[in-house]
Image (cartoon, rainbow, N blue to C red; front, side, top):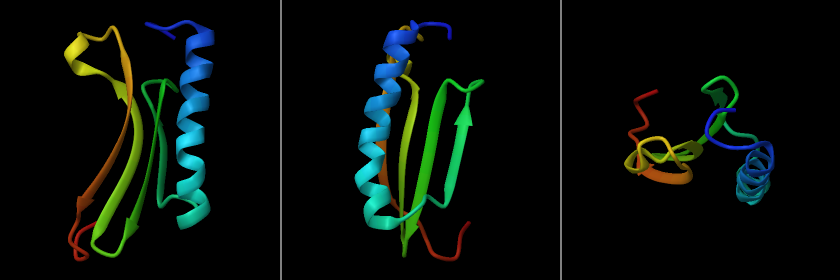
Length: 82
């Protein structure tokens, strides 16, 4: 993996899994689960009525690709949209 060594990658992935675990326990399996960037980053999402919840790993864009980030998004998402 470009940009991080295996130890950092394992720690980052473990932290991401720990963040997802209580959400999965509460809401069940995600509606969307995917791996992006050749297995580098993971993304999961749930819909709860008119709300979308996503937990994702990605590049931290303000660092010009030197750092990775994990983020949680909770946004209003109309029920009539995919």
